[in-house]
Length: 159
Image 1 (cartoon, rainbow, N blue to C red):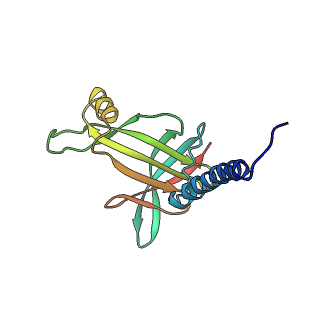
Image 2 (tube, helix red, strand yellow; image 1 turned 180 degrees about the vertical axis):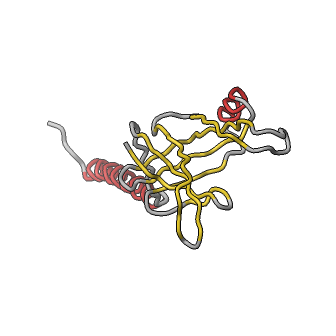
Image 3 (spheres, helix red, strand yellow; image 1 turned 120 degrees about the vertical axis):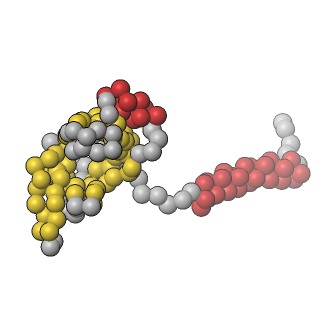
């Protein structure tokens, strides 16, 4: 029969106590040091239509231009007709792209990073892939996001 001395019993209990305290300390420190953040909810599988509007004395009027995004696709590109500018004296196409797509279906908030304009498809593809010099944009169904001096964006439809 094995005999347990007070020293052995104290040593065994001490080790168990140290182990339990270590686990508690690790768990408490983990939650204490973690910053409180709002989770980003990206919901794939939605088509988000963003309308462009002008504003006059608080009245928003649809311009008839829409951007249609897929909530699960990165580097989505589109073109628009640009008027004459510094690099072309005639009307011509400008290419833009969206990456870092995030759609929160619960709150109906859509965010993306917009790149461009570029002058052709291969240039905008390269710019979007590189992910530099983009502008972050966020729209929802209740307010208007000022995109340009008199162009405002807002979600008009979600499918």
